[in-house]
Length: 256
Image (cartoon, rainbow, N blue to C red; front, side):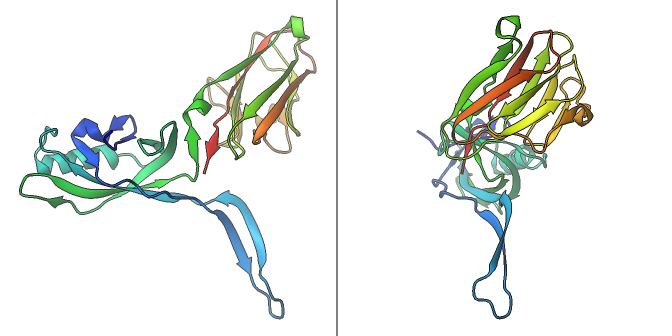
């Protein structure tokens, strides 16, 4: 199988090129500050509770028999594809089947052109620290109706070793008001709402799903819930609810 990568919905092979060397494995590291004090052996460690971004590089070459462009046009096509967007896009490669990264291309090295017309270069991406599971992009739904007293009591298994940051959407059929507890973290809606609401843990925000208007003013929460490695409990408790609602969770399973 040829080594390939896909960025922002376009594959390297779509423009007649391949990865020529298998990318080396890269890992992200916890961001820590070490502070030394006179007279004390051993530094104080401050954990910033985040992982650092990492770089992923691919050595690539065009294949003249597969490429519809001459060397100059190939370089133009490559740069137009990779360098015209400066926010995170989805990056997949054949080295990590079933997973993807969130990445932005930061460099295309000076191309080397051979007499045959083959172009060699290295493409470098700056990536968020985690690999995300393709399975974690699928929405999981739970229904609250009169048959279950407008409450949800469920479990959700995270098979990865790292906590994930889910996106949770509540879709009501009418005015609802309840609290949702995932493991030991509770989010309480202090006012009734009848439009779909999203709890966006990666973005640290709560908003109306259709308008994207923040609605943090109708929510009480010390922090937003994570899905820990292993089994997670999901419980909703109605406060003043007489209408059905659906809870949808995109779990965003991830690994380093």
